[in-house]
Image (cartoon, rainbow, N blue to C red):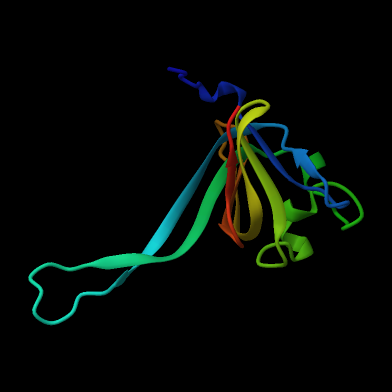
Length: 142
């Protein structure tokens, strides 16, 4: 049985050229895949029954803030991570979430739904992005 550790994880997001580029200082990430259920219970039944509905995915990533990863123009850098360039809520970006460097990868198209920067006097400046999937999430194992 393979047991993975998270210390070699990688997050890649589209750069200005549309190529997934690794974020430099990822602290953690999460992804959730969920499916709606549609009730099909009819009168005369004592238990509820359901069928599968629509699926979706969402997630977030926490990183140390690196000014080089937040371009001031849409011509370079990880355009998807600069909220002042209207990246939040705009057309989908590609994301790749690697559990261990080059294998065990989740990938899909996302819309960035939130961007937060946190700064404290006794810590590192950190940034968080949250995202909503657009379409299907895929998973490839090593």
